[in-house]
Figure 1 (tube, one colour):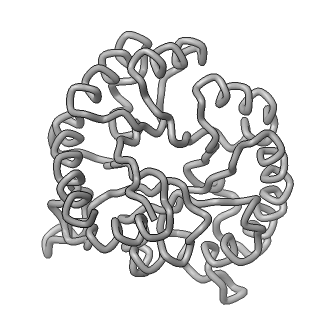
Figure 2 (spheres, helix red, strand yellow; figure 1 turned 45 degrees about the vertical axis):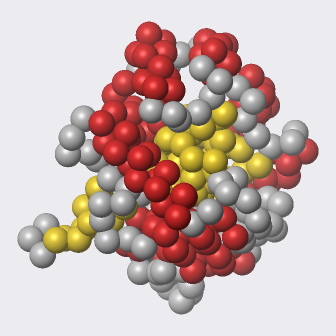
Figure 3 (tube, one colour; figure 1 turned 135 degrees about the vertical axis):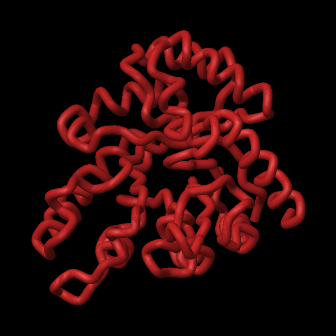
Length: 259
């Protein structure tokens, strides 16, 4: 058991990482609030060598990525080389492609592809990671949920998970309990708070300002050996950098009281 590293999912700041210059300023901003662990996602078309330079310059630990699934399938060796440049062992996708999501056959096809991709990454010292949304918790015609199929019908070495607290809640499961269910198959967890109002239904909000029991989620991550917790907020009502600073401050407090 160890305390996870705390950091940022750059997708939250995607409007500020489209160019090399903006990305450097964003890394500088993250450093100023104490963040040195990041997930790279939503970054602009910047040569990987330049991204690697910024990662080294600002002493960023890249815990995982989200990349295009087709690239992962068709350009596996290139993707592996790109991740080695930035010192990242975890190669993630943000979701399964749309055509696989809503049928037994689609889910099975995706599982078959995972069984081919996972061993290739493992052989290179990498780990395939899958990030959930809510649709994976709807039952298919076979009576099963896609998320349970991903957990139960793949080898642990072939597929790990980037579970997301907001989407676990939205999908109808207890986030902390599901994190525990994935024990041993998760290096990174997305902390995203869930604010419910009678007028608007659920919405994204800064960590520590919503309805989720993120203390329980933190303890589940700590107890199951999760290496990093990164803040992700899909939509921000305030400046995303200010939002990230608020969330990070609150996440530090959650970690401190559950150390």
